[in-house]
Length: 361
Ligand code: SF4
Image (cartoon, rainbow, N blue to C red; front, side, top):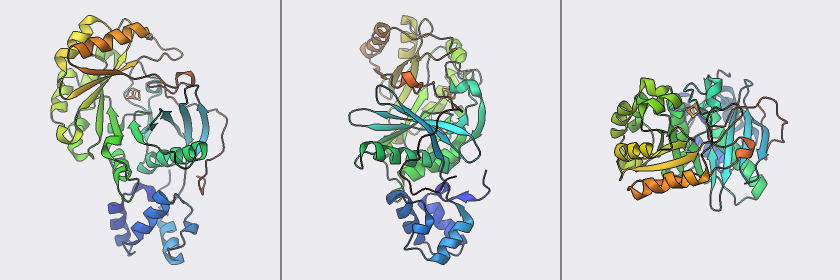
């Protein structure tokens, strides 16, 4: 990994402070952010309104490298999965999920994941390293550029979910800074409601959520029963449901609004009437929403996909008892792009780098 900072590791406020320390004028931040986030020109030699001396100084202090899209594939339903290659040879995946009105980017926060959920393809590979702030932000920029090339200049990423590889709260500071850049009016200027942070339930970090920008929160619950949840998520042995909900109660909900509980529905494991009753008694009806995700089978998985009728019954039963519940339509499962199926594939055919004025990493 490069020892010098990347220019995309900073939001406008922190870059302004850094430039000040370097003896450079703070108005440069506006020009730098304009080139990167508005014009999307990464080649500093093209930043014509910045003097040559200042450009040389910036080059000596910051990296401007860009990762590569080494592979991408679009599924029958229009979901596109990408493999992104970084300078150190590691790779992560990101996915663009398309619906009529939205283009949602599911991005990764880590190379691999330490949480080891037993239903998750990514969880089988362990954690290699955290992604830096710029590696997270660049997933958005690469996806935006690809979308523009593929669908035309009007097409934009409208929403971001931190549900790719990794546990975002395990990479708290870098994801916090990346989120600030996504929200920064001088940066990408996205609305708070367009970003969803999804966590497996890391209690100490949930307790620090008042330090995180106020975006939507999703918590992977998957069962209201400790025994079943521990089977799915070994993390539950350290932070059981009682402890998790004590932490959730402290989330400043005025900012975070209704919390979404992700529930992977698995045949014969967490799909019974008893599971419904346990959920109804655990969750606060006003402040919760249940997102049911029918389990996606992957090669070697020991769990089974539920039948469509069962998924429908489970969802309706929760709704009838006053809990807002929806079913997430499974997308991209023919290319292993659906939830819990991400795992980097090292030997895929490279595709051309999308239309960046690019400096290859
Ligand atoms: S589901 Fe998420 S938290 Fe669990 S192992 Fe997979 S990537 Fe990690």
